[in-house]
Amino acid sequence: MASPSRQAQRFVSGFRPRAWVVPARCHNGPFKLGRRVASSSAGYQTRRPAWTPIWAGALALIVGAPLALQSATANGASLDATTLAEKDAQKKREATINEDSPMRLRMEKFIKEQQQIIVKELEKVDGKRFRKDEWTRENGGGGISCVLQDGNVFEKAGVNISVVYGSLPKPAIQKMHANHKMLDPSVESLDFFAAGLSMVLHPKNPMAPTVHLNYRYFETANPDGSSQAWWFGGGSDLTPSYLFDEDAIHFHKTLKTACDSHDKTYYPRFKKWCDEYFYNKHRGECRGVGGIFFDDLDDSERDQENTFAFIQDCLKSFIPSYLPILEKRKDMPFTAEEKDWQQIRRGKYVEFNLVHDRGTAFGLNTPGSRVESILVSLPLTASWKYMHEPEPRSREQRLVDVLKDPKDWV
Image (cartoon, rainbow, N blue to C red; front, side, top):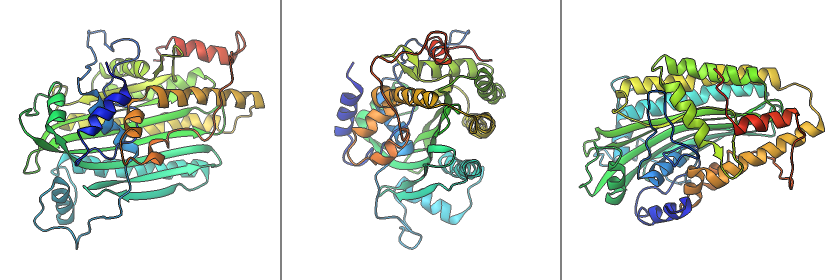
């Protein structure tokens, strides 16, 4: 199998005329799992679509896209809308978004609302304000990047939105058809829409864990603008430098509650998927203590309304899953040696993002991508010490032991 970067280059070369010129980084997408196929006790197996680089690119869109100087306005938009982006812009001008609106507009509205709520709560904790950058795309859509750097609590924090419109060429459609039979592989092109919210928070205090979150939606559209094929993906995971069992239990328990309210098989399936994707195989250890991770949830799993409700509950569970942990740990005393260990663990975080993460690789190999947004997930500081090993039976060694053999926290 070709390397992710080579796959991305091949894909981009066939895509340059119109579409995927905006991918950026995100921990997501169908992928070849790090160690083993995710499965539940019922024998469920995680699907591995043949079109991995394509959806990896869609995931990458969540936190990065090229800046465009032009933006459509109500006065400048065509009254005779022809593209999907123009159709949606006209819908938003004519009526408020409600339960009868297309799912793509409902998802966009939801993640923008959640971004505002999360940023507001994080600003309360830190005491400093996020920098807010808004950008638009020539082909439709845009994004909002909210970044806080050198705060009182957070060394680096990013809460980003991306909304992307484009066109899939025939080769891409044919690859995606392997996993989405609703797609007609004979058509020459299809309009698509991708949107999502992605977040990474790196606290200053080594006792407070890093957290990552991403939830996204992708759909292709018929010529009249109606939805053709659709799917959701996402997840959230915790990466501590110092392991407090009660923190991992609380984080996983909150996610399990959100999952169980929709399907009792979701949590064990998606917990296993998370452990296997966020895995530094060259180190033989997970990036953190996990959480949930999933992709490709379409009508073969549940109907659109129920899946959207599941996504909403998962995203809304972030604040109760993480902020209580942060409040307990952000002001704890720590030593210079403990801060040094945090820097070493952050180095492992960087290694995963740059070596194994499909979205990062795709974004960096795509012409015109917004590199600053792709790499916003990286910590402000990190370190790599040659042949560093923690002391036997130390707190640092216990963390490494757990990362090498993931635990069932609930």
